[in-house]
Length: 619
Image (cartoon, rainbow, N blue to C red; front, side, top):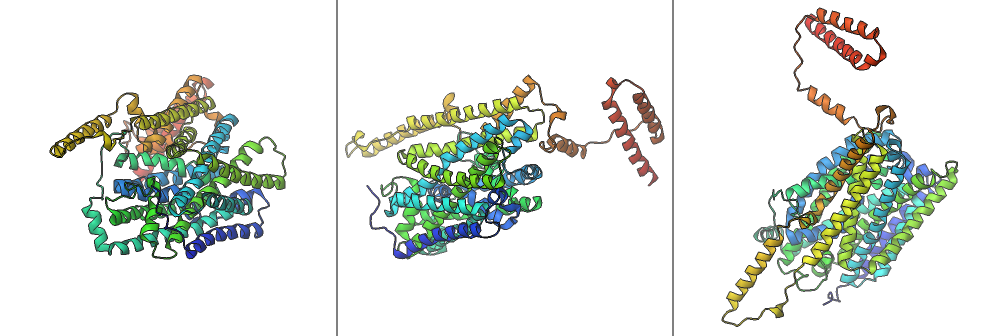
């Protein structure tokens, strides 16, 4: 059964939707014609490294808050309760670690592409591997990101599918190509305001439709839709506190720590301090966005209860529930559906434009410039704009390919986006935290991580498809007198089957791993295999490391532990220890080189400790 046909846009709705596209285009034209007019790669790709922390933080949030999150999070909360809200706990470490580790490393190296780091730390081969992996990740996601909201809009309102795809795709391509990163960031700011306004308006009007806050609260609580903290440690359970709050940290790190779209924003800030501040400021923005999405899901539950439009076959997938809710319950408010659709496509535009700009950057900096080091600045800028425009066309082509896929393949494509981020996170962690890792280990680790990622992800997808059980009403025959008994028997059988399936074993246990653990698993595999191969082939020596490419994690841990360690007791007076140390130093000075540096360093450390004790004694 198709969606109710009379739910369509009014003139006001079309005007609001069109204003979003026009305003986004206008921002791109403004930055194309003002300032330096995007004549250098520094301006086009990094906004002249002159951005302030407030627009950067809103842009960072908008890139993460995709159209999939706008329609997916409320549907998740409506279907399964508020357990998903606990992913907000992962934002703490997921933003603190990039702010204090990844940003300082990348910013001080004066990078343009995050994958330049991989060449500085390892070699050119590792850099190319990382770049190609990122391009593969983003190209797949671009088509899904632009097609999914267009499909939902078409299914619910009858709005022309390819009209929506072409309008958003071309507008996004043009303003990204003309205005560069400045246009992308400032359109993100504008689109963030639209996103918040659209969600907030739907929540306010939805609560009013239910009968006010008291009725809304009573329906949600009576429906037992507030989820408690599920502390089940089973990693195969889809959503628990541990999968969301701990597994989500690795997902956040792959997005806010090493993803080029986010790293590029950090590098465009005026100072390192402002880059760190933008990372701090995105935390409340993300919490507000998550809260609004979850509240929308609760409002939908208060309006529909257990009478899901999906069960009535008014819609074909739960991803269409949010738009159906807007058109069904709020159609008496002209302009509100248009405002929310503008909100939805704002999220899509911000994500896709970031993808275009970041892909143009890595293609130019990692694949083209190393081959043509003498290229002029004017030609490099022109090529960057051509790459941005070309990726826009690729996005439209990918949307056309996605058109021939069914919904389950769409879910698989979204899973691929998450699966590739984990190995890339592991590759950067291998270089930043482990000075012993060499280039051979980095390549081997990345390959192993990708293999495990696609093996587990694809196996989980195939297993889920093959174990789906469909119960057809015509297979159940019973008489009126035995109705209750038969229903009880069928219920018992289904419960038994469900309980047996809930305890997978062997490969099925691995395939049943929650998708929230994918990044943690894949990044861990990269680090483990990378270190193992590095030690087998010969760990990298300290003298071969580029200064600033390794975060002194071991030194930090040792310094932290020394704060709690008790000093060794002295068996002699400070003056006697000074004499002993001087004798040791004189002996070291007169010895062969091969007895060398370690003992000399110990002597100097001992002298420093003696001087400190003598000062304490004099006081």
